[in-house]
Amino acid sequence: MSLILSKRGLMLAFSLAVARLSSCSNIPSIANHFGTKGRYEEVNPYLLNDITSVNMSLLMPPSSFECSPVHVTAIIRHGTRYPTVKNIRKMLQLYDLVLREASGDQAWMEQIRSSWEMGYTEDMDGKLVEKGRDDHRHLAVRLSKLFPSLLSAENLRRGRLHFQTSSKHRCVDSIQAFQQGLHKHWGLEEVWYQHEVNDELMRFFERCRGFVEGVENNRTALQEVRKFKEGRDMAEVRRKIAQKLNLPYARVTPDMAEAAFFLCSYEFAIKSLLTPWCHLFDLQDARVLEYKNDLKQYWKRGHGHSISSRASCVLFHDLFTRLELAVQNLRLGQELPEAATVQVGHGETLLPLLSLLGLYKDPVPPTADNYSQQHGRSFRTSGIVPYAANMLFVLYDCRHGPRLQLVLNETPVRFPGLAAGQEVPLYADVRLRYRELLEGCDIQKECELGIQPQHHGHRGNTEL
Image 1: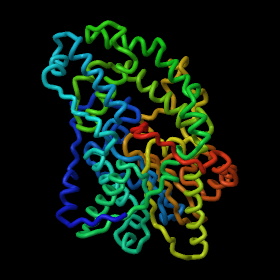
Image 2 (image 1 turned 90 degrees about the vertical axis):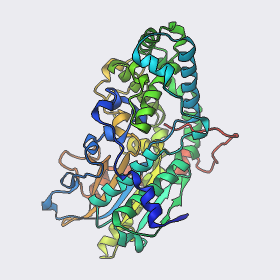
Image 3 (image 1 turned 45 degrees about the horizontal axis):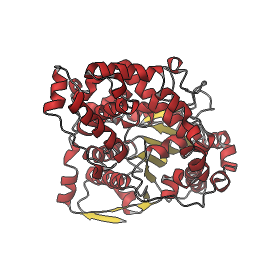
Image 4 (image 1 turned 45 degrees about the vertical axis):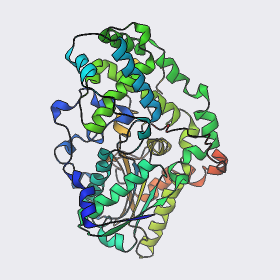
């Protein structure tokens, strides 16, 4: 698919290059707990001062390795989006309840009643917002600054940059915005945007029978989430919300409490607004609601059930097939066919792959009953998969052989199972670490991949 833009059109599309980031006074005190609905800037706060700033020294291997980057694969979540229909309906139900039955003379309550507008409609269903386009435009600039020899105009002209995306409009719009960012950064006047739609890779989860039947459509698979939702910690959050709204406790259901939290997070992520809905929560409440979301992602997309992560083997093999070809070209002294591969998908694309690699696996799994012991957990989606979350696999040509670096959200991460100090390990060591997956994890056997996604009319969006 291709799209041609004039220089004027490109400038208009990139008119938000001066980031619409909020001042510190407008940032909710609970913004670090919005989970999969959080801003990328909360993970990297330095971007609040300069949205295109990078730390070259953080990513480069030690100079003694004598390395130069030869390839990068970037797997990226789409940018900030509107709520899905399901959540829009919940938020509208809450808003109607508050207007009809809530009372109180607090300033924020008066603001909800008199000036706040429910601006989310069902036709918005998960679509990318302008902030989401900015997320990818700015990320493209930063990655081009980090790897100027790879993400370059010359490599684009020579066909050495490959762009793939999920078919969902928020992903297609994100990858086009990413390319806008590159072209603006390079100063190109009239350009073609090209990408390949590949749901087999970017939406593997809906093609995996084992996952669809064993987890997604299996009520018992998420029993920990339901237990926590009905437990005492959520009950306390509901009690406090009911008290602030002067409503009977029974009127504030778990879904209503979550809808208020969504309103707080969406208004901030999309519009950089500190909405009056945020006044319903203190830090303790936010941590409870964050944990509820993390439970869902852990047991549905993470380490909770092996099929959830092993469904991503098709993406894992795609990555290592590309890396292996690159290493073979290095050995032969030939130019690599692809300098960079950019793949845009979903939170459901990244989380299973991260789990397959063994990342963010705590010694004790999170459950409905051990919330108080999980405050120091590593599996926190707020820091792992905010909007525009990204995994980079950077291949280096080094003096003693090729090395591979893993970078998550622009911060180097060590491959699990490798010794400390191996932040940029030899590629051969990484292959040895994942030998079982490389030699096995047959996606046909794991998932019975041949099934087609089931679409019974309009199902809407069900993602993170």
